[in-house]
Image 1 (cartoon, rainbow, N blue to C red):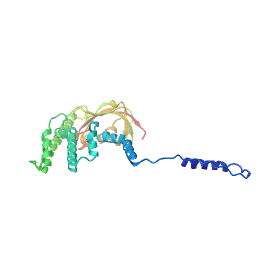
Image 2: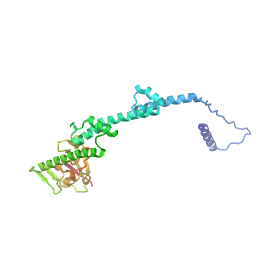
Image 3: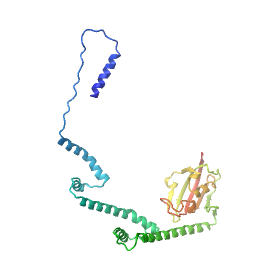
Image 4: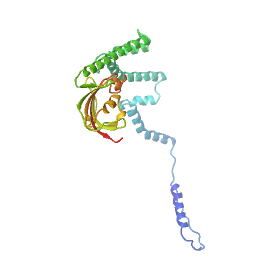
Length: 292
């Protein structure tokens, strides 16, 4: 064994480092270490033992990874033992897929379509039963609409919502611009000076420290360093166009309110928290200019 061989080599190394001894004519005795005897295991015992040893991993895999409840271990075992025909397995696979899609429709698809088509999380625009009917009849080739004509109807509603959103945001901008304290730049950026600072002006290469809060035109706060109780630090050109333009007009110590049209913000697509074509209203407080 490895231990015996290693021990032997260490002994030889130690002996080599000692001064040579005179021969006495007697042979040195060599100690023999007997290796422990390992007995074989018969195949039946081994197979059963390996199965038992693997069972905790299997329990974790089917439970946490595939949501098989312990109440249904007997059903799982029937499947593992091959008690179902290929036709039965195909049927069960279809049932599982159907129930998976049903859950996705309920929790994700229908709420997302409802908001996209109506502009509201709370509106009851989508009719679940009719949506499912459309899915099932389309799948079976029995629908009263072709997929192309159905898509045109859906796109018509999305285009209508887009038109409404653009108008709402444009009307908000127009109303905001009428305020006597509001100024407008050539790009279309609107802003109000809440407090004019007396410090240095940032440039394109500056790194700034700011506190801010961002709102949609309905008053929804989508981001706030005040809520996080932690100012943000970033480069002047690392933010949306409306911010970059405004920061370069703000001396350190200034507090401005910005009203930024969508083309100077997140555009026609928006992002995870900001709808397409959104006009954004920010309170921005320039605290400091840091090193470049």
